[in-house]
Image (cartoon, rainbow, N blue to C red; front, side, top):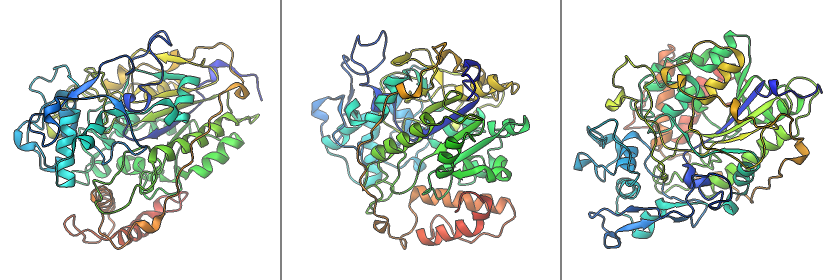
Length: 517
C-alpha cells in the first residue's frame, strides 16, 4: 500500500442512505450539555408540542413533552411524510380545515403551507399532524399515549452502532435535507441537485420514472471517465435510485449490484469512485424507516425493528471499509464514508430549517405550488474517514447536496447541478487531521441482536398496499415509456403481491443484469 495522503481522502466516496429519521430522533441525546464545545441536541431543553383543542384524547393536558422512545419501532404507525404533512409539522397549520383527518392525496390547496414563503417554522405541529395522519390511516383517533410517541427519540445505548460512529468520527448537528417532503424528491436532490419540480413520490405514478429528467452525478462521473455503482441489499425488489432516475439512468442499470458485491469490492480494493448503498426498503426492512403498518393494515410487515436491522447493516458496511487494506485501488485511507438519511419522515426535530434558493430560479412554482425556497428538516449525518478526529461536531450548516459539491470539487466535474447545490459547502473542511488514524484504533461496533423476519407473514395473494402499488405503477409507466407492452392493471384494481413481483421480474429484470431481480 502506498503511503496515505490526505489529497486522496475523497478518491472513493461511499454513501449509505437510510430512511425517514430526524436528527433529534436518533442523535439528539448523543452528548450531554457541555460535554463537547457545542452540540444542538435535546438534553437540557424544555421541548414540547401543543395538543390541539380538537384532539379527542389528551387536549386537557395542553402539550406533549419530549421523551424517550419506548420501543425500537417508535413511532408506530408511520407518521405522514408528504409535503402536506411536513407543512403542518413545521408551522402548526392545517389549511383549509377540511385537510384534517384525511389522507394526503385528498388534501387541497394551499396544502397546509404558510401564507408567507419566508415565514420561520415554529416546529410545533408534530402532534397535531400525527393525530390527523393517524386518524386518516387507522380510521380512528389515537389515544394520548399513541400520539405522544411522535415526541420521542432514542438514547445512545438504544442505538450503539450509530452512536459509536457519531462519537468516533464527525457528526453534523445542522445537516438539512433539501425539500420539506418525502423520499423521492429528496433522493433526487441528493444525486441531481433538483427534483424537476416534483414534491411527492408517485402522484401520478409516472412523475419520477418518466418525467424526472435532471442530469445526475452518475452521468457526469461516467462522462469524465470515473466509475460508479449502486449497491442494494439482496432483498431489494426495486432499487429506488433506479426508479427515481429511470429517465436518465436506464442504460446504466448494469451498474446496480448487490451489497454482497460491495463487500467483495471493498476487500479487493475495487470500489468505484462513487458508491451509493441502499438497504432493504421493503418488508422486513433494515432501512431505519418507521413501521409501515398504517400503509398495510392487518399485515405484519414490521415484526422486526428496522432500526436494529439498520444498525446491523451499517456495522457491516463500516467493518468492510475499516478492513479494506488493498495495496492498490481503494482502501481504508482513500475512502470517505457518509452515513446519510433522505428525510425526517415526520419524526420530531426542534431546529427550524433555513430558507434556501430554488434549484432553478426561473422555473416558477412546482408540484402543489411549492417554490422550493425552504429546506427540509434536519437529519442525521455522520462522516467516517481516517482523516477525521473522534468526537467532532460540525456546527456549520450542511445540506444533502454537499455530496454533489464534494464530488464536483474533487474531480473537477464542471458547474453546479443547480442553484441549490451551488450554495452547498463541500466536506473537505471536515478532514481535521494531517496524519491518518490507523484503522485498528477506530472504535469497534457491536449491533444489538436483530429479530428474524418471517416472510410467510406477508400474504402473496393480498392486493398491493399504497407504497408498493405506487412503485409498481411507476415501473409500469416507465416500461410503457420505453415502448414495452404492460398489463392493464389500475390503482383501483391492483395486482396481488405475487403477481406484481412476477411482472416486475419479467418486464424489468433484464434491465438489472447484475442485481438478480
